[in-house]
Length: 218
Image 1 (tube, rainbow, N blue to C red):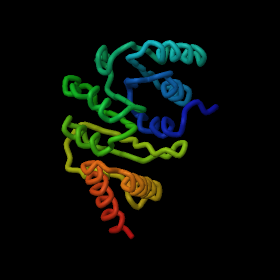
Image 2: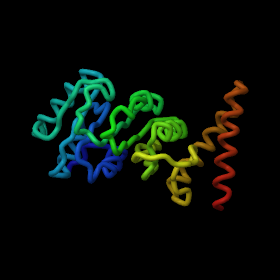
Image 3: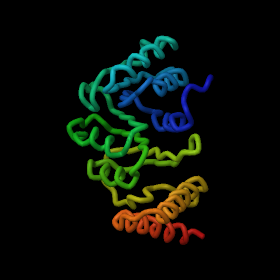
Image 4: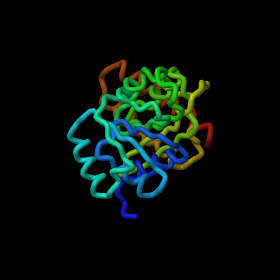
């Protein structure tokens, strides 16, 4: 199959197997939807976006691959206009704060059993807030795509005690360790040039957490 999505979305797609009714919030050009429908005959998926222009491009892409009967598009803001049959949500390519703002009323949608998220930033914040919303981590992984690191987390309903900074990432995994070492070295560089005391303290605390955790594994 011709590669139509990046490595990040391809890995994310693996977390959507064995699900029936998926809503991709912020679907952009619907490439994830098209990929899933091309690869799996039993997939039917809805894509939504708050912006009209991406949806127009998504419609063109869906027509190009003749997937009109398997991919539904909705012009909507977050969970508004959600179909009652939807049981799985996926959101990727936006900041964690935006994701949590979208999901803040998730308890009003009891049919949602699985949520797959791939935020661009603020990973500890996302873990903390998702647990407050009543969701626990089933699986998570770091993906390196185009020399950038991304997190993919699969959630199900439930509560748990968890390290919000490291989550359930296996720190013996080479790529996961590489990611945290990248953050550690990036913070060291920033500390050489930063004057804001509060920001300096935050970065120093973050690096202490990383150093202590990784040192235990050496």
